Length: 394
Image 1 (tube, rainbow, N blue to C red):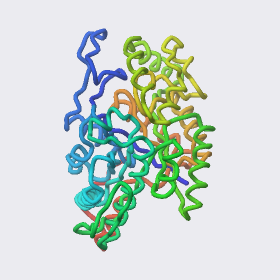
Image 2 (image 1 turned 135 degrees about the horizontal axis):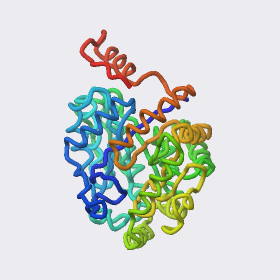
Image 3 (image 1 turned 90 degrees about the vertical axis):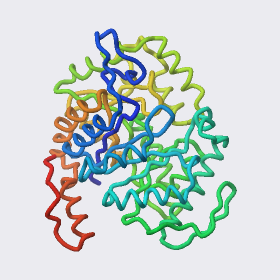
Image 4 (image 1 turned 135 degrees about the vertical axis):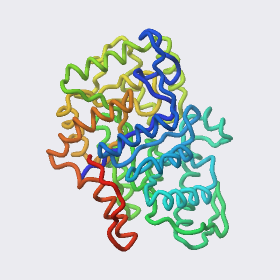
């Protein structure tokens, strides 16, 4: 199966260190933080589109801008790029979510993807008024997605569950195409929900053997439901012309971290109820003094990001060919989609897009250019050729 490559919109802010969304890096003699305003995010989105990425993930949570509003503002800034909108099913009505996704799909000519984030931090969930415990949140997500798919059927939908109930749920029109659902979660409560509902099961960047084990579990559960699921991995990337340059950049990011920042972040992450977060923390063990290469947990897979960042905590580090090798290794165990990011996101998009992407293309791992596929999709919907779509060279 050909690879799909996605990038990331840093709606908490961006900069040249991992933690610059929180402070100015005075040691560099400048205020290096880049606010997440619409002009900067549009610059990243246009770069991702030009470089041939399929879509961009927009995160959800307290410390970032709202993903729905941010991505809606970027529809007219792009032509082909898809938006992987992350949201929490516990804080929105399923019928409203189905309506919002349908509206987005029509206004964007079919460019919305949905990332379902059940949530693993009780403190943050309660901030949004959600007092369910971990397993109950996944049970509610199961009901939520049942309702969303029922609404998208185009017929009034009734549902009565333990957590949610709707009667005659419907919207103006069913979305066409139906947005793919991306879903993550590593706990026993999460995997059956993924098997029943996910189009793409997303995992954070553990070593390939651990990812393969998780894929096997989800694949078996999905087969029992009569379904097939695609698989994706969420990673950061530090790609350079040489391996030495890439590892020097990883060391620079590590050197910019303050031990107090690491200790505070690790204390917060240790309190998470997320099984996936627990697995991320276990990869690095909080070892700031190990040096960049000391946090290499698999050839060219680096756990240093997770010292201060929740969620995805590992990065692909190396030359363009070395990173392509590791991506090919993930692909061999069943991963077909990669959601990537880097610091800063604008520059790293170019490092990857101009360096690693051609290496993957030479290996025959990429499908036809996404711009051409987008033109064909529009032509099929309109019943004829589309002459006004500007061709973007990837």
